[in-house]
Amino acid sequence: MDPLDLVGAEPGPARTILFDGRPVPALPGQTLAAALWADGVLAWRTTRSGGRPRGAFCGIGQCFDCLATVNGRPNQRLCLLPAEHGDTVTTQEGHGHADLEV
Amino acid sequence: MPTSKSEPGAGRGGVYDLAVIGAGPAGLAAADAAAGLGLRVALVDAGSRLGGQYYRHPAPELGAARPEKLHHGWAVFARLRDRLAAAPLVDHLAGHHVWAAEAGLPGDDAAPWRLHATRGPGAGDRATVLARAVLLATGAYERHLPFPGWTLPGVVTAGGAQAMLKSGLVLPGHRIVVSGSGPLLLAAASSLVSAGAKVPAIVEATSYLGYARGLPVLAGNPAKLAEGASHGAVLLRRGVRLRRGSAVVEAHGTDRVTAVTVARLDARWKPVPGTERRIECDALAIGHGLVPQIELAVELGAETVTGPDGAAALKVDAQQRTSVPGLWAAGETCGVGGADLALAEGVLAAHAVAGRPAPARELATRRRRRSFAALMAAAHAPGPDWTGWVTDDTDVCRCEEVPAGEIRAAVTELGAGDARTVKLLTRAGMGWCQGRMCGPAVACLSGGGTGRPDSRPLSCPVPLAQLAAPREE
Image (tube, rainbow over all chains, first blue to last red; front, side, top):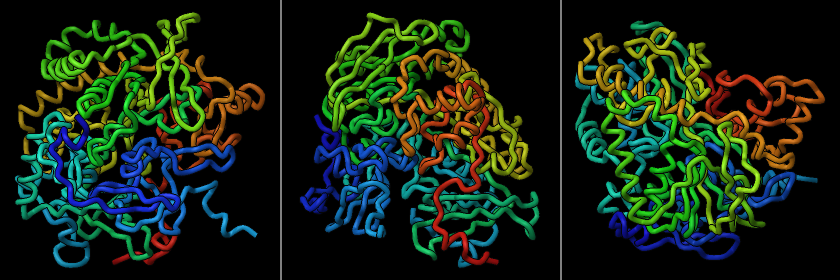
């Protein structure tokens, strides 16, 4: 049994997102966080002071642990964003605005 | 139902008789009942689909033929959803996250309530909903008690694991320990094993003996017992072991969780030395019950009450009225008590707003379920010595990475006596989540102030461009 079998899901063809340059399948209707979990990926951010890995914690947009850079925009909550074909997700390091530093 | 059938100020919007904030059980029942009584209703919700967290379900594109397999009471939701879809008096404003409410004058069309909502990151993604009365049905979020290793990837909230499963049909791992306290643990574990995960143990901090003190209350709530028994049957069939009076006191791993240490607790929740046991796993789902989500009302000065578990809830009268004129509340915002209670209170609030007498059936449900909620909150209230398993280097505030040692130093060396002072000295609770994850823990470690609700002028992040936009008239 897996979750798709349990509810008798028959999703359309998977889309492809890129996680740190690697293709990852995403079922239509899944969030980016769900697509990454399904692929066994649990972390997509490193913390600002400790550099520790983090991913989805609360799953409903309350905790902000699941932040990552999506299509170039940092600090996006992956548990809320539907996965679109061709989305690029990049592991976010620190506050996500390293490109602004001088 | 088409979403966003109308926008305020354009088309049908205008001033609604009632704006319901939140489309979970309480909000759905209220919107349905209010429309049935002839009120024009805006059902305003941050989510993209009706249902809130309790009835959270997969997007249609996932083609789930049997979504009810992950739910209790799905038929109730399906009925409400279908009725609302056919209700011409209800506009479902999906994807509208209300960040502030401005009080109106009850019944006064010239000065109605103004709900300020954000619909996305763009400067133009703002919306204002006008209404003569407002019902807050915003539900709750989870309470967490930190322990060493709780920030490792693979450690997720019990509600979060359920939410990701219900909507995305995914699991965080294959072998998932479930730990914390409260009935949500049984529900979460039952969903996880049904979806194919192994759950080597449910680790529940209380002994469940607290329920024995409320036998008459239990006898009056056979449906709650049946729900518990149905989860229990699923868990028993799959060989899931319930360890009562125990807690996960450490999660192990470097890049992700690989095992946990479980210890027995004494009556005050102090770990008993020598009882530690290691359980291998690749995920851990944690939670210590729920906390009412009431910031919109608190910001308006609504009175609160402190529940038996120390959490603040909105104070309402027999008609579900808060202390703020024109502001009503139903469901978990009035104290966490489950979906049946929320459904009943939504109906009661709708009748009161419409000036109709309260239906007897909902009155009886509220009376029974509120007693059960109080019993449940008391039975699962965190014991005072849980802080004993938090080491000085355990991050308590996940966002700002503030370890317990810094918080303890703020208390013992700098004289902080409450969570607010600790926050100013250490930044605990000052990050992205605004203390939603660490608030209860910081309050306990500060040695005071349980139950005092946090004040947040904005209930969610709002782009500056939307805040700066001129007021719509």
